[in-house]
Image (cartoon, rainbow, N blue to C red; front, side, top):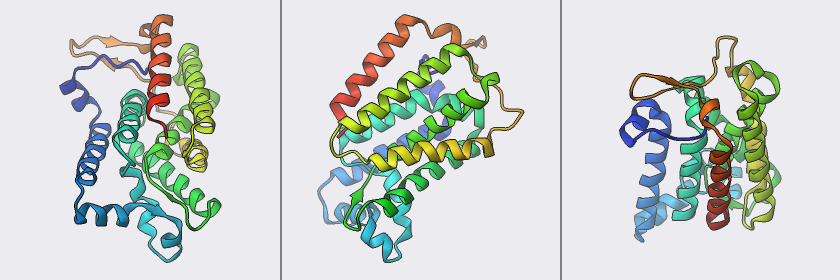
Length: 236
Protein backbone atom coordinates (compact mmCIF):
# COMPACT_ATOMS: atom_id res chain seq x y z
CA UNK A 1 0.00 0.00 0.00
CA UNK A 2 2.85 2.40 0.83
CA UNK A 3 5.64 1.04 -1.36
CA UNK A 4 6.13 3.25 -4.40
CA UNK A 5 7.09 1.55 -7.66
CA UNK A 6 5.86 4.13 -10.18
CA UNK A 7 8.14 6.27 -12.28
CA UNK A 8 7.74 10.05 -12.13
CA UNK A 9 5.39 10.35 -15.10
CA UNK A 10 3.18 7.49 -13.93
CA UNK A 11 2.97 8.97 -10.43
CA UNK A 12 1.81 12.32 -11.85
CA UNK A 13 -0.86 10.56 -13.91
CA UNK A 14 -2.16 8.29 -11.14
CA UNK A 15 -2.08 10.79 -8.26
CA UNK A 16 -2.71 14.30 -9.65
CA UNK A 17 -3.93 15.81 -6.35
CA UNK A 18 -0.90 14.70 -4.37
CA UNK A 19 1.36 15.84 -7.20
CA UNK A 20 -0.32 19.25 -7.19
CA UNK A 21 -0.01 19.63 -3.40
CA UNK A 22 3.69 18.77 -3.51
CA UNK A 23 4.19 21.24 -6.36
CA UNK A 24 2.55 23.93 -4.19
CA UNK A 25 4.87 23.00 -1.31
CA UNK A 26 7.92 23.38 -3.53
CA UNK A 27 6.66 26.59 -5.15
CA UNK A 28 6.07 28.37 -1.86
CA UNK A 29 9.35 27.10 -0.43
CA UNK A 30 11.16 28.59 -3.42
CA UNK A 31 9.28 31.88 -3.08
CA UNK A 32 9.94 32.15 0.64
CA UNK A 33 13.55 30.97 0.38
CA UNK A 34 14.48 34.08 -1.62
CA UNK A 35 15.15 36.85 0.94
CA UNK A 36 13.10 39.70 -0.48
CA UNK A 37 10.61 42.09 1.03
CA UNK A 38 7.85 40.44 -1.00
CA UNK A 39 8.66 36.94 0.29
CA UNK A 40 8.64 38.28 3.84
CA UNK A 41 5.22 39.89 3.27
CA UNK A 42 3.83 36.64 1.82
CA UNK A 43 5.10 34.64 4.79
CA UNK A 44 3.71 37.13 7.30
CA UNK A 45 0.31 36.98 5.58
CA UNK A 46 0.19 33.16 5.60
CA UNK A 47 1.67 32.10 8.92
CA UNK A 48 -0.82 30.79 11.47
CA UNK A 49 -0.54 33.46 14.18
CA UNK A 50 -3.27 33.00 16.77
CA UNK A 51 -3.47 36.67 17.72
CA UNK A 52 -4.17 37.74 14.14
CA UNK A 53 -6.72 34.96 13.74
CA UNK A 54 -8.49 36.36 16.80
CA UNK A 55 -8.55 39.71 14.97
CA UNK A 56 -10.53 38.22 12.09
CA UNK A 57 -7.79 37.00 9.72
CA UNK A 58 -9.45 33.61 9.37
CA UNK A 59 -7.59 32.65 6.19
CA UNK A 60 -4.69 31.82 8.53
CA UNK A 61 -6.60 28.68 9.53
CA UNK A 62 -5.88 27.36 6.01
CA UNK A 63 -2.72 29.01 4.67
CA UNK A 64 -0.25 27.38 7.11
CA UNK A 65 -1.05 24.05 5.42
CA UNK A 66 0.95 24.99 2.32
CA UNK A 67 4.00 26.78 3.77
CA UNK A 68 6.89 25.39 5.80
CA UNK A 69 9.67 26.63 8.04
CA UNK A 70 12.49 25.43 5.80
CA UNK A 71 13.65 22.94 3.20
CA UNK A 72 13.84 19.99 5.61
CA UNK A 73 10.34 20.65 6.93
CA UNK A 74 8.94 20.88 3.40
CA UNK A 75 10.83 17.77 2.26
CA UNK A 76 9.61 15.65 5.18
CA UNK A 77 5.96 16.55 4.67
CA UNK A 78 6.17 16.13 0.89
CA UNK A 79 7.89 12.77 1.24
CA UNK A 80 5.22 11.70 3.73
CA UNK A 81 2.56 12.60 1.19
CA UNK A 82 4.30 10.55 -1.51
CA UNK A 83 4.34 7.52 0.79
CA UNK A 84 0.98 7.73 2.54
CA UNK A 85 -1.29 9.71 0.23
CA UNK A 86 -1.63 7.66 -2.99
CA UNK A 87 -3.68 4.81 -1.52
CA UNK A 88 -6.24 7.24 -0.12
CA UNK A 89 -6.40 9.34 -3.29
CA UNK A 90 -7.30 6.20 -5.22
CA UNK A 91 -9.68 4.83 -2.60
CA UNK A 92 -11.54 8.08 -1.94
CA UNK A 93 -11.23 9.81 -5.30
CA UNK A 94 -9.85 13.28 -6.00
CA UNK A 95 -12.51 15.48 -4.37
CA UNK A 96 -12.97 13.43 -1.23
CA UNK A 97 -9.21 13.32 -0.77
CA UNK A 98 -9.11 17.13 -1.01
CA UNK A 99 -11.91 17.38 1.58
CA UNK A 100 -10.06 15.09 3.99
CA UNK A 101 -6.71 16.81 3.53
CA UNK A 102 -7.93 20.40 3.83
CA UNK A 103 -10.59 19.52 6.40
CA UNK A 104 -8.16 17.75 8.73
CA UNK A 105 -5.68 20.60 8.34
CA UNK A 106 -8.39 23.12 9.19
CA UNK A 107 -9.45 21.13 12.28
CA UNK A 108 -5.81 20.90 13.39
CA UNK A 109 -5.34 24.66 13.00
CA UNK A 110 -8.64 25.42 14.75
CA UNK A 111 -7.54 23.29 17.71
CA UNK A 112 -4.19 25.09 17.72
CA UNK A 113 -6.01 28.42 17.84
CA UNK A 114 -8.23 27.45 20.79
CA UNK A 115 -5.62 25.55 22.82
CA UNK A 116 -2.35 27.40 22.24
CA UNK A 117 -1.75 30.98 23.50
CA UNK A 118 -2.46 34.03 21.33
CA UNK A 119 1.22 34.61 20.58
CA UNK A 120 1.63 31.10 19.17
CA UNK A 121 2.61 30.91 15.48
CA UNK A 122 2.83 27.81 13.29
CA UNK A 123 3.31 26.60 9.72
CA UNK A 124 3.32 23.23 7.99
CA UNK A 125 1.04 20.56 6.56
CA UNK A 126 1.69 17.90 9.21
CA UNK A 127 -1.78 18.34 10.71
CA UNK A 128 -3.34 17.57 7.33
CA UNK A 129 -1.00 14.60 6.86
CA UNK A 130 -1.94 13.22 10.26
CA UNK A 131 -5.52 13.56 9.04
CA UNK A 132 -4.71 10.93 6.42
CA UNK A 133 -3.64 8.62 9.22
CA UNK A 134 -6.92 9.36 10.94
CA UNK A 135 -8.69 8.00 7.87
CA UNK A 136 -6.44 4.95 7.83
CA UNK A 137 -7.13 4.39 11.53
CA UNK A 138 -10.86 4.49 10.87
CA UNK A 139 -10.45 1.97 8.04
CA UNK A 140 -8.38 -0.36 10.24
CA UNK A 141 -10.98 -0.26 13.01
CA UNK A 142 -14.29 -0.14 11.12
CA UNK A 143 -13.73 -1.10 7.46
CA UNK A 144 -11.66 -4.25 7.66
CA UNK A 145 -13.27 -5.32 4.40
CA UNK A 146 -11.12 -2.88 2.42
CA UNK A 147 -7.75 -3.50 4.07
CA UNK A 148 -5.86 -6.69 4.84
CA UNK A 149 -4.26 -7.63 8.14
CA UNK A 150 -0.68 -7.01 6.95
CA UNK A 151 -1.35 -3.44 5.86
CA UNK A 152 -3.36 -2.80 9.04
CA UNK A 153 -0.28 -3.70 11.07
CA UNK A 154 1.87 -1.43 8.92
CA UNK A 155 -0.49 1.51 9.45
CA UNK A 156 -0.61 1.05 13.22
CA UNK A 157 3.20 0.70 13.40
CA UNK A 158 3.86 3.87 11.42
CA UNK A 159 1.17 5.78 13.32
CA UNK A 160 2.74 4.80 16.65
CA UNK A 161 6.16 5.92 15.37
CA UNK A 162 4.70 9.21 14.20
CA UNK A 163 3.04 9.87 17.57
CA UNK A 164 6.21 9.00 19.48
CA UNK A 165 8.26 11.37 17.32
CA UNK A 166 5.58 14.01 17.85
CA UNK A 167 6.22 14.05 21.58
CA UNK A 168 10.00 13.64 21.64
CA UNK A 169 10.97 16.19 18.97
CA UNK A 170 11.15 19.85 20.03
CA UNK A 171 9.21 22.63 18.30
CA UNK A 172 6.48 20.28 17.10
CA UNK A 173 2.87 21.46 17.03
CA UNK A 174 1.59 18.54 19.10
CA UNK A 175 -1.97 19.90 19.12
CA UNK A 176 -2.05 20.00 15.30
CA UNK A 177 -0.78 16.43 15.01
CA UNK A 178 -3.29 15.04 17.49
CA UNK A 179 -6.29 16.97 16.23
CA UNK A 180 -5.34 16.38 12.59
CA UNK A 181 -5.50 12.67 13.40
CA UNK A 182 -8.85 13.12 15.16
CA UNK A 183 -10.14 15.28 12.31
CA UNK A 184 -9.33 12.65 9.71
CA UNK A 185 -11.05 9.97 11.78
CA UNK A 186 -14.15 12.17 12.13
CA UNK A 187 -14.32 12.92 8.41
CA UNK A 188 -13.65 9.35 7.33
CA UNK A 189 -17.14 7.86 7.95
CA UNK A 190 -18.69 10.79 6.07
CA UNK A 191 -16.62 10.07 2.94
CA UNK A 192 -16.03 6.32 2.93
CA UNK A 193 -19.11 4.66 1.49
CA UNK A 194 -20.18 1.06 1.05
CA UNK A 195 -18.85 1.24 -2.51
CA UNK A 196 -15.34 2.23 -1.41
CA UNK A 197 -13.00 -0.51 -2.53
CA UNK A 198 -9.53 -1.58 -1.42
CA UNK A 199 -6.49 -0.02 -3.06
CA UNK A 200 -4.95 -1.91 -5.96
CA UNK A 201 -2.22 -0.33 -8.04
CA UNK A 202 -2.48 -0.93 -11.79
CA UNK A 203 1.06 -1.16 -13.06
CA UNK A 204 2.23 0.56 -16.23
CA UNK A 205 2.15 -2.82 -17.96
CA UNK A 206 -1.56 -3.08 -17.24
CA UNK A 207 -1.28 -5.85 -14.65
CA UNK A 208 -3.06 -5.25 -11.34
CA UNK A 209 -0.72 -5.56 -8.39
CA UNK A 210 -2.03 -5.95 -4.83
CA UNK A 211 0.21 -4.19 -2.37
CA UNK A 212 -0.42 -6.76 0.33
CA UNK A 213 1.76 -9.11 -1.73
CA UNK A 214 4.51 -6.55 -2.31
CA UNK A 215 4.72 -5.47 1.30
CA UNK A 216 7.22 -8.07 2.49
CA UNK A 217 8.96 -8.05 5.87
CA UNK A 218 12.17 -6.76 4.30
CA UNK A 219 10.37 -3.89 2.60
CA UNK A 220 8.60 -3.04 5.84
CA UNK A 221 11.90 -2.92 7.74
CA UNK A 222 13.42 -0.59 5.16
CA UNK A 223 10.35 1.65 5.15
CA UNK A 224 10.46 2.02 8.94
CA UNK A 225 14.20 2.74 8.85
CA UNK A 226 13.79 5.41 6.16
CA UNK A 227 10.85 6.95 8.01
CA UNK A 228 12.76 7.11 11.30
CA UNK A 229 15.85 8.59 9.65
CA UNK A 230 13.87 11.32 7.89
CA UNK A 231 11.93 12.18 11.05
CA UNK A 232 15.15 12.30 13.04
CA UNK A 233 16.83 14.59 10.52
CA UNK A 234 14.04 16.99 9.70
CA UNK A 235 11.27 16.94 12.34
CA UNK A 236 11.86 20.11 14.28
